[in-house]
Length: 302
Length: 290
Image 1 (tube, one colour):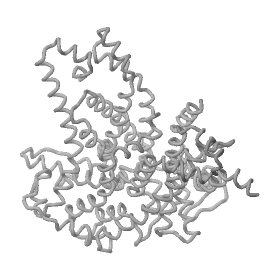
Image 2 (image 1 turned 90 degrees about the vertical axis):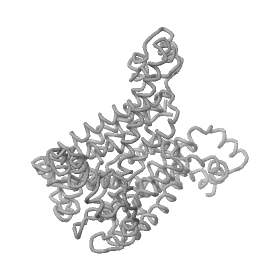
Image 3 (image 1 turned 180 degrees about the vertical axis):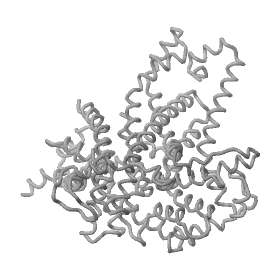
Image 4 (image 1 turned 90 degrees about the horizontal axis):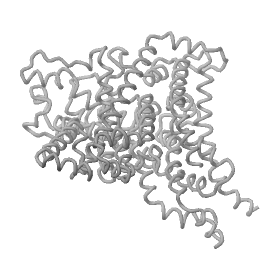
């Protein structure tokens, strides 16, 4: 594989081997990359085609075949008619639950992360680094270790099984990440900026509001996308801390797929899965660059 | 007073988040640790009674299966994702014309919920209408691929789906690493007539050691926390053949009503993560402070 390199010297080396050899290797390279592209796309393709087939066609046809007759019935049923246990309202109400959980969860945790990062990076005081390290470690804990006490606390607070309860949980356990994003971003801004602003009479909040926030658009986007993806895709908190009417879409999807009553409707399952995946897929397609920055923040040293 | 307020405002602003982390991360870990040392059953009790829950845990065949599965799943998932990610990154680093599009395709599974991934692979791998039926339909009547419902093989379907989901992310990490290798050194090596594969094995790949470490940490972390994928793909079954520590903990906490077992299994998960993450975090923070 390594012979197919196109770095300058490698190109020079292969020139001596003859142009024919080089072309063949290039074709081989593209072929392998293409096969892997098919591998990554295949499940999405199968989900999509299955969701557009009738049950009859699924039973008699081939897994990877295109639908002979395209029907959107499964999509309609997945959205508003499929059964999650005893209720048969599709994923629609749960989709909106996820929106109601994600929007405040993302906004509050991002805002708090911005303020925290600003303090830790720009208003250093004794112990700030230890505070940061303690918050950072919170990103890494397996959430199983907080499930039991959190369930009790939500009960004591009277918000067990409610959407505000889930927002609260997501904000708390998202704080470490959002603080990390903003701290690492603000730490690259020279401290002279704050000093100069202080000389000019600006205070803590004023400097944050009129100097730092306007500089922060890229990292706000990273934080919003990260938190949105985390909260939307969450299953553990959703399944542990929700009740019948407040489940997020991931929990509803799992209930639809694994409900044991009636005929298994694979096309409806697949349509429901795509609906549950659409918001984060859309975010990824529109703002992939920022999505990757969030993923790699903290794991690759800049 | 106003002056005092202004000078302490940064700390006042940070305080609520810090207190929240102290309570909801460290306090809660402490609570779970405490309860793991009691005879709690359906409800938590607070009289310490030694390591009885851990004795029960280590004597439980189901926990044994869960830990074995974690070794198999974690080991294969980490190694294969690293190898595949590295190979894909090197292949993509050869001035490919449509690199952006290919990268997007390789990485998109990372944007999906594990529940969605599990649902998709469950459908693809189901013996009745999935891959097995498809290949049989092509005329290979004796083709057999029933791992999803085979207790001995089901854990490997979890490995397959997890690699599909995460290998693109490892590729992105390595690709960023390849792009940051000093091109001068590579050029010098090539002028000396060192073959390309040697440049990779002797210079480029060793210089990416920190990225191997980061990728390892992220993947190990994903493996230990794996919960949703198992729930959606196999439900922990057949039987409890694909249980992982996370699903064991959940079952004890919410369906078996065994708080003591739930707490002690969560503490073991915590310990495993601690062993992997703390040295890493420590070196990271030290390096940044220097």
